[in-house]
Length: 128
Image (tube, rainbow, N blue to C red; front, side):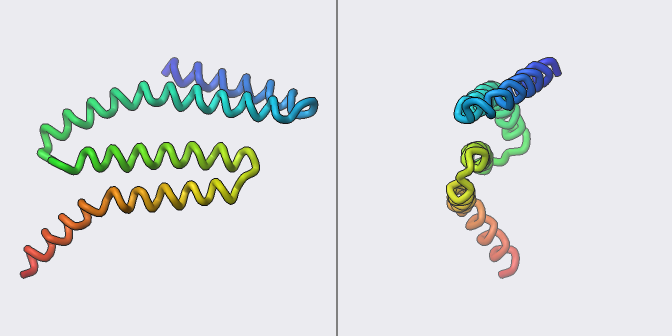
């Protein structure tokens, strides 16, 4: 809980300073905002390592086989595309942000196709 408190205080502090810079030099506020976003994302990656370890332990119990790496890839694609599109949208490049989101969704679709294929084979095996 203290980590989220630290990140929250850091984020609000930087945003307040960035607001002050917005009147003088708008680009400095933008740089500060991007820097905080990168810091938070970097810290999030350290937490994701613990989550991945826990997921692989669950995989051993649930015997999920090939599904877990696909789920992790989908999660990573989602986080990265959301992060990049939010930065683009915050800087005023909404069209690029939308294209990043579309590319992320298509990437998730491509990565999940093998699972969809297995599902279709399973359903067809049950029906016929």
